[in-house]
Image (cartoon, rainbow, N blue to C red; front, top):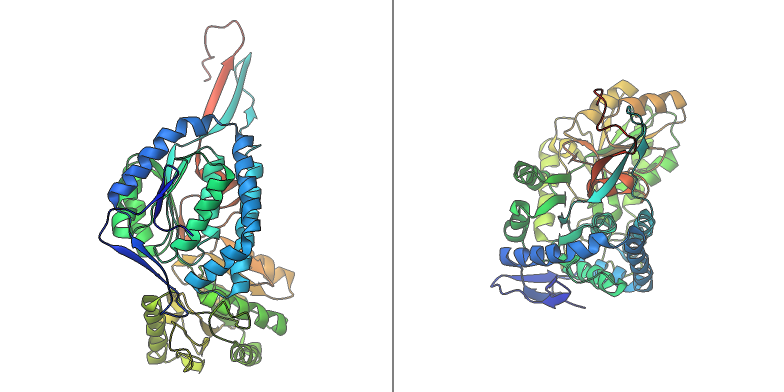
Length: 489
C-alpha cells in the first residue's frame, strides 16, 4: 500500500516536518502508517499537474472517460475485501459495514461510467426562424475535493467519479485520519487508466492543504463534506473568489413514530440508524419523537436491542459496532453524554466506555429518555452512538419538534396512515424523507443532500452531482439568410 501524496502520476513523500500518524481506533497501539503531511506547496504542484493534463482529458470523448470509471469499478470489485479490511482498520466500522460501503462506491462508479454517454444537453425551440438552439454541458477545468473521515471510500468516489467523467481534473484532499483507503482509490484510478495529472491526491491538514485549496484561484469548484464550522467558513472564502461551491455538512435526524406504527419494524430501523457505523454518519438517527401511547413499548425494544450489541474491533466479524474514530471524537461524544445527564435527560443504557475495551475509543450504545427540545442532545449533532427519545402528542407536535433544529438532512416516519405520510412529507424540513424505513441510506441515481444548515450548493450523487462539475453553454445556429437574430431576442 502506498503512503504520502500522489501528483502527476507519481507517489512521493512531501518535504514537510509534520507527519500523518495513521492509527487503528480500535487498537491505538496499531500504527498503520506514518509519513510527512502535504503542504500548500504540494497543493500548487497538484494544481499545476492538473492544469497541464486538462486539455487532453477534456478532449477525451465522454464515453471513453466513462470506460475508465467502468474499469475502476471492476478493479475495485476485485480488491473489495482488501479495501474493506483497510477501511475497517483505519476508520473503525465493522467489516460488514465496510463491505457495504465498498459496494456503494462501486455502484457509484458504475452509474457515472454510464453518464459518460449522456451529458444532458437539451434542444429547445428558438423564437427566430431558421435558427437551431441547444445547450451542452462542459467541464469546469480543475476542481478541488475535500472529503471527511467517516466514509473514506464512498464519499471520495461520489465526488471524484462525476468530476472525472465530466472531463475535469481533480485535486483531492482526504482526511489525514484515513489516508490508506484514499490511497487505494488512487491506485484503482491509476490502474484503470487515468492519465497522469488527471487525479491528484494531497494528504495534509485542513489549515494547510484545505486552506490552500480554498484560496487557489485555479480551482474552479470546491466540493466539501464535513463540519458546519469548517464548511461555513470555506463557503464564504471560496465563493468570494467566484468558485462554485457545494458543502454537505451536519444532520440531526429524527424518526417520528405514530400510534399505528409497526413497533418491531420501527425499533429495528431506529437501532440500525442510531448505532450503525457507531453513529458516525450525517444520516444517523439521532432523535426519536414518539407518541405517548406507544413510547414505552418502543423504548423497551430499543433498550433490549442496544444492550445486545457486541462492541469491539471491527475486524472481528462477530462484532456489531466499532469505536469512535479518534480520542478527540470520543471526548466530544462523552461530553454530550455528560451534558444530557446534567440537563435532566434520563439515561436508560450505555454512556460509558466498556470496561474490557481499554485499547480503543469505544463507547457503549447510549439511549436517553425524557429529552426535551431545549437540550443540547436534542439540538446538536453528536456523531456518536447516542439516541435521544422525546414525546409528541400529535403529528403537528412531532413536526414542530422535528423541524425545530438548524439541520435538515433526512428523516423518517413510521405509520400506516397514508394521509399522515403525505402531510409529513409536505411539511417536514429536510432534503430526504423515508417512510417506514431507516433515516440512513442513499442510492447512486438519487440526489443526496439537505436543507437549512445541512448543505449549501447543489446536491451530490445522481445527475445533480454531475451537473455541479459542469457549466452550461447555450448555442444559437442561424442557418437561414437573415443577417442576425430577430428583435425578440
